[in-house]
Length: 81
Image: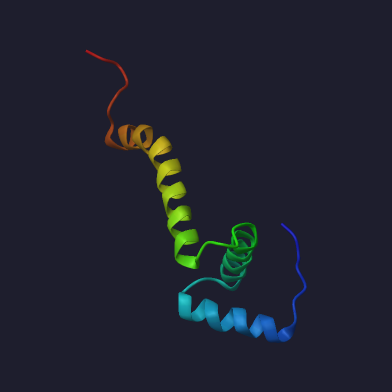
């Protein structure tokens, strides 16, 4: 974890946005930083396209991890009878 210095004006904007988006101030700042990085590295894509790709990646990583977690949560053993 690190500390990033930002202007008071930008901090106020992050605070306002975090309240509207029901995120912590840090989560809002992280979101904006991530979106900015994605936009800079994918200049031809729209915000919607970037978010759609992020959602797909999150779903795929969740699908890889989820089946085993569901089995454990349901109490299903791994032995085959």
